[in-house]
Image (cartoon, rainbow, N blue to C red; front, side, top):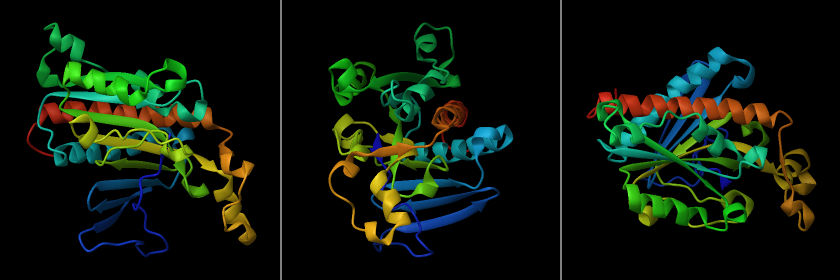
Length: 274
């Protein structure tokens, strides 16, 4: 479970911590808003104006928009051809942290078919793993992914994880993406080695959805007296939505659809953002 990707958002029409080399673009795309920021890393926030859990048509629209941005991010990271490795980060035993594993289960993996000659590599090469958590496997998730990378040598990694939000209204209403990688556990004070190009040797596109929030952030929103984060047990209290099981399944399907679509599009249009 990672933190939200920093410095993506437009707060009340102003941009906080702006640097001269950073650029922000905000687009209204029907019933969702795309906020894109380019600086040391390229970041995207898709703000959903409706709940996709009970609206299949809207979920498909979100998937289509996410697919187009994912293709662009992969191209921007230098991907042209080769194996894409999808990594589902998180603990499937905890519903709110199961976004990564649930997404991986919905992917159409093809690498085994390509290697055996059954599938044409022109259809795209996709492999996937669930990195799980060290409390379950006894092995750091980074070590698992690093070992797989050294063995199969992907050209690009797409990492999917649950994010910890700082604002209630973002819970299950936003999809975030970054080409700067992700730090598993960073959202709940248990930061691990970063999944990024510097540590894994290949470009990493991270995709996440804010599905949990610290109680202290909720308190700060509802009570001026709690603007200073409380100390003690409330620092460890993390909450989520009552319909989190449906939210995880919906967003896992959206992200998996976008990854599947992006892999096919990247293979069929190897040198364009089409």
